[in-house]
Length: 87
Image 1 (spheres, rainbow, N blue to C red):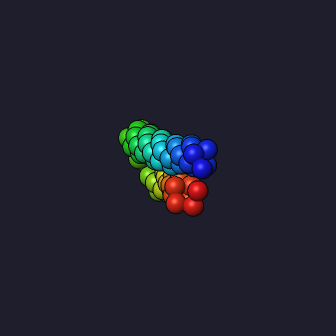
Image 2: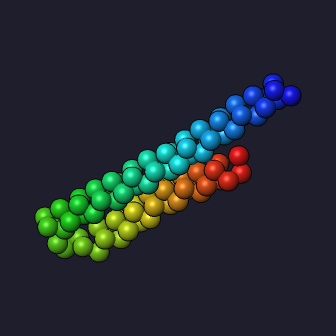
Image 3: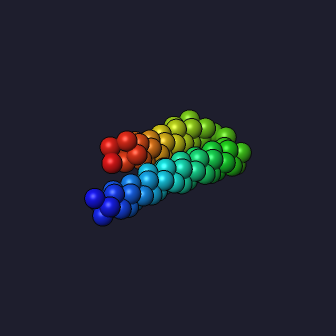
């Protein structure tokens, strides 16, 4: 009986580490997405300052790129939530 309790406690510790790892991975992914979107915005403003006539193209490309990066962050959050609640 004692061996079963030791095994159960060990498995619970591993699962707890998996949940912490999932939360850490999601936070890193969201921070990376925030940095990427901020760089896109900064570079877009830089290019608009140099060539104001390309405002429409730059703005649309910026929005599409930011949406793709944000989608990747959402996938990371969903994967982390699945690991935290289903494992």
